[in-house]
Length: 118
Image 1: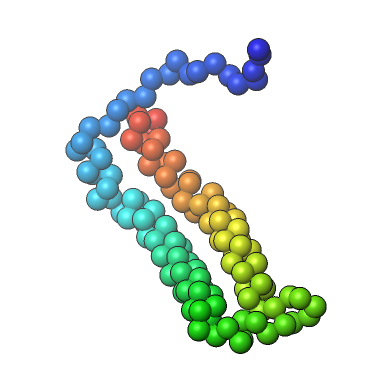
Image 2: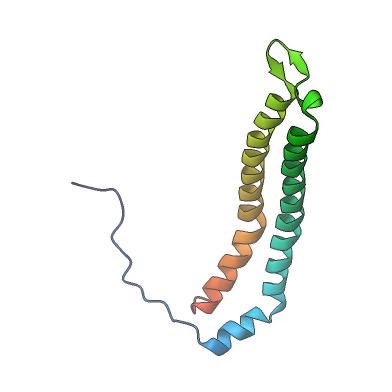
């Protein structure tokens, strides 16, 4: 069975020492990478949890409101439930774009430097 995958690289990478890891962890570059991640992930996580809890609380305590028919047999609860799935996929897509644009280049630069490539 043939595959299109290239053979494994014979190139060996230098393993960083504990001191090198500590030095990178304390660097401004790594701090900026962490800030970029946290400034995106934490607010979005809090917003999504609040949105989810709103849905759960409305479902439990505002049955009449959630049961309000919008058109046909479609009610507010169904629309909110589908919106939960949509927002999940939108957040994943948005994070993937953010990571590839802002996080991955910084992480790759750190990784390359740590493995002795720079």
